[in-house]
Image 1: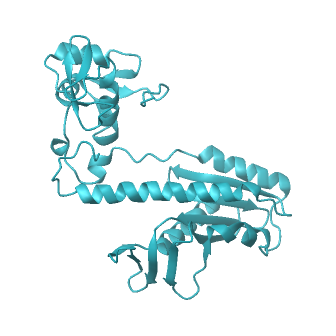
Image 2: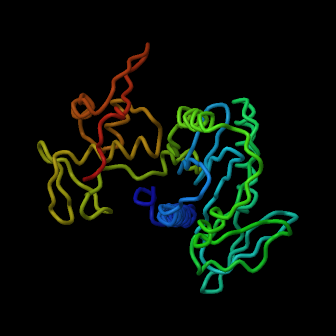
Image 3: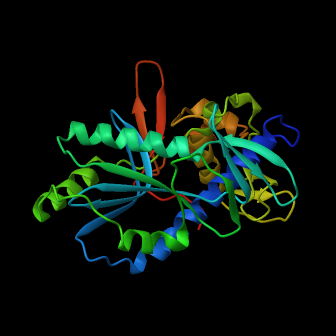
Length: 305
């Protein structure tokens, strides 16, 4: 998205912030996953990490701890600086190292929403386990100055000790029932799909820069030369560079592409070239009454190596 937005696009800064937040969140989840590798309490348990479903309930949870007595949800946040939680309304106020203050969605509200959704899921599965949810701060440089009364916020470093010594309620499930419950959750799992990004961020397709970008220079465009692509800046040639561009179309614009859309997005001279590019096992062709549409064959990896 950043690569294909014009330099002075009004949402450039917003997309940059979303990217930083996404990368930071992933780093926080990785850190907790590493710390939990040595988790070995004296009670039977199952751990599911990075869980999501998108059927009748849309739910995402960083870490789920299943026990015979209860379910514990852990939401990890990696937001640097000084953090102050306010209520009425519920907002997280972040003050960065440079002194800039920003208002963000409250992770405590997000955690409570995840808890409510998981309780709804349990009801649909006829499982009567209580659910508890805790917010986890990934790194020590995240300083929580204020938190609402009754809220519980853990640091990632203390999570394993807190869970080791956690006072569990009376057992409800047998060991076999616990394992069946875990399998039920895994069967419901559906990988979170954030795409396409443009409509989700209220960006019109006409605002997205077209063309094939060089995999080496990243921001430089390539020209179609005979049966290959050549970067106008560094001179790199790559006969398959168009596949990454089409993949970006699917991530940004919509999950299907027509020959005409392909021609325009790749800035090709001829429709026949676009048709030849899409006539590839990487793409699945579906014909309706009016036109042929092509979809990405998810069994084939076309990410950059």
